[in-house]
Structure formats: C-alpha cells, structure tokens
Image (cartoon, rainbow over all chains, first blue to last red; front, side, top):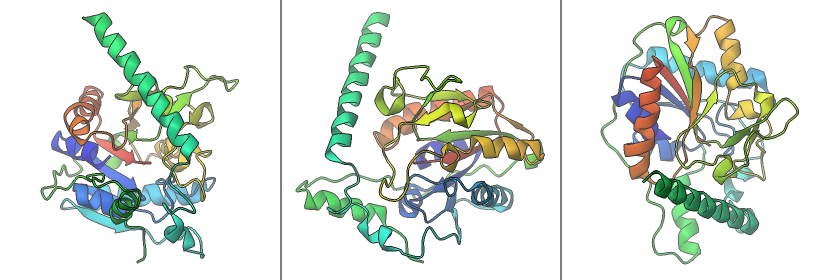
Length: 125
Length: 167
C-alpha cells in the first residue's frame, strides 16, 4: 500500500496511510504514516467503535495539514488490550497467520482468477 | 513503545518453515511528497484500501461471485463512494483472526466515517469511487501498473487527497 501512496504523491495527490505494520510502511518510504498498534485488520480504528475510528481519521487529517516534510510517522496512543500477549502470539505455531484451509482456498481462487484473466486476454487478442 | 516488527517476524517464520528465500519487503530512501495544496474543507478526498470485499444488494445478496480476495479482477477494483457499509462484505483473510474479524467494514474501510466528516464540512467533497488494490503480490506491478492506474483515476476525478488503509 505504501508503494501506491508513493505513486500518488509523485503524481500530485497528498496521502496519509493508516497502518498496523509500522516497520513495513517505514521501510517502503511511506510519505505520511498514522500508526495504530492494533492487530492486523483494523487500521482505521477499533471495530464497532465509531468514536475511536473518528479519532484515528482525525489524527490523519491533522498530519495532512501539518506535515512539512515526507516520512513523518505519528504513533497513536490507543491500546488494543491491557494484555499484550497478542503481539507475541501472532504468526506462531499456536496462532499461524493463515490456517491450512484458508491458504488452500486462497491459492485455488488465485489460480481461478489467473486462468480467467488469461482467458480474457486471449479473447481480446 | 512495543509493537510487532512484521519484517523480522516474517523472515523468522519463513526460516522456520524451511524456506531459504523470504518475502522481500520494499525499501526506499527517497520519499516523494505533495504538500496539501488547499484546505481540507475544499479538498476532494478518496479512499484506497487493500481490503477485499464484495458489493451486496439491499437483501444482502452478493452482486458478483466472490473471486480472488473478493473480486474477480487482479487489478484495481472500485466501489462507489456512496455505497453503504452495510452492503459491503469483506472477504479479506489478511487479518489477525485470533484478535479481530472483518465484520465492521468501517474499521478498515471507513466509508461511513468519511460521509460523516463530509457532512460536518471537514472535507470539500468525496471522490466518485473508492479504490482497492491487491496487497503484497508484486512490488513491480504495484509500482508500475496498479499504482499508476489509481493515480490516473484520481486525477480524472480531480482528487486532492487519498486516505489509505492497508489490511
């Protein structure tokens, strides 16, 4: 996503990226990053909590207005849970990122989409 | 502050799985930058995400058969910006499913919150469409094909600002 942000900035569109993976966006050279230390899946605020979602978005808008140079990262103070073991457990044998079934379905759908795309390309030739 | 170092964690994960090659995360020193050109209250704003979803009708029936990541295209996918969140269903699998689910669309695709901000006069206007690109599958393609396609559509619609929500 940071690579899309870079293309947009280079083309004259101002961006702010709401991230859960601070290091990935920073490494990619993200122009403006709002980091929310929540588990992957809720970059725009806590689910079912419109107030928190507004706080996150408004932090991004403030950064848009105030940033005077590229690469600024704002670390938001919100805490997902007092118990921080979710950070240790992520991507371990106990809690693998994708279940075997999920990965299998993903690969099948990807194959199907590729085949369809190839088919479309042949038809337009 | 303690937070997950995803790059380190991914490398370690692949090493443990016995792969000698791991995912190569993008690394750039130079960062392009476009300062905000006008007050937000006059700006046209869009939303770009990597989350996948399908559009549904009012009865909750999908308007298309879910394909890869919820769309039948591998490239840029658009959704009308006034499409109600209740008629969007996420098919993303790239979240921490032990901690959260993708039920509240606004937590990763804040379309309802954007309309509220528009109604408050925080934004000048919202773009006609919102965009979705695939995550993490080809840096070259993101930079050379999908990114430029999103840019082209943004410029065509006079978009000033993009809010990005990777999932």
